[in-house]
Image 1 (tube, helix red, strand yellow):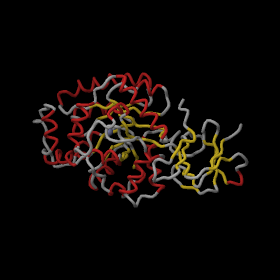
Image 2 (cartoon, protein in one colour):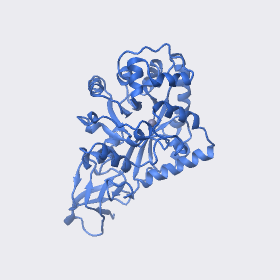
Image 3 (cartoon, helix red, strand yellow):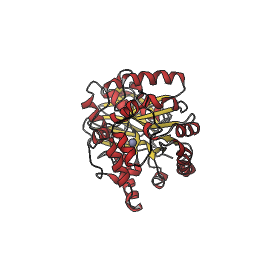
Image 4 (cartoon, helix red, strand yellow):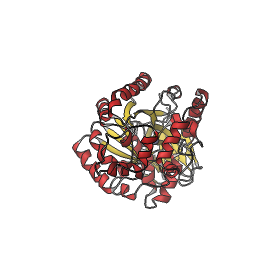
Length: 394
Ligand SMILES: [Zn+2]
């Protein structure tokens, strides 16, 4: 059996940065065999400039919204962004499917091998059947009016069942966000997601917390515009996350997405809740989408003790100009200069694989895994990367 051998300025293993004296050895299918000293590597070693890394894990995307690239105005704030999405998301099937295919090609070219993808429709099933990337399909349900819970759940279940036909092991039902899911609906979703991988948009805007803490602000305008009677809602002086946390007690992992206005006390609450339940929480950061929608970044308190819980996402092309984790890493480095190369790369690889429950195959260069192999020529220049070896998924 012959092997492929890769050497570069550095090999990033998923958790460690090795120097140029090491050689990565894989099978012809990209299955990791070993990392050895140069002197033991033998012949036919391919040499590169830059960092060789496991393929990237994009923990948050909405592939089905790819046709909205460049459509939604920037920095309008959360409520107008939501309203704009609702008004603009309809399109022809041809345009939607074409945009999905192109967006996937973009992710592949940018070294992404696995995606946590939010689905409200079945539009992405055909593309995903081609198995060019690994997807975890988060079938998202929303419905803030308690009386509508069963009806909204049943509608989500229909989409879910269609995905489960093709992707039984990597499809779960998930809540949209604290402000769009009623207690009754949280319960229905929680029951079916027991011990699975879950996700929820969390504290993406200041207004979200304001609504839960004081019952006022721009979210009142959202419900009014949508014709939703929220007279049942009572604010309790708690953040949005604190208000719904009790409903997030059943999943194995829950990926909280954005966390732009998550505070130190939210994190402490989450840590103690996590110890009481079996749920492991991950913070997925999507800084380019934050800049696009609210022009604000998460607080640096997120990085205090949580470095093993941070993962990255691109969000969709409705709120981002590109689906590229290197672009996210570049902006992260500017916003949070104290983060090291190793930490940033671990967010994009090893941590992401853990969050999606796919660490047995992805996210690191451990023997037997098949994580995809990418070359990053310049970590803080997103145009300088290429895929050396893309996974054959099946
Ligand atoms: Zn999103």
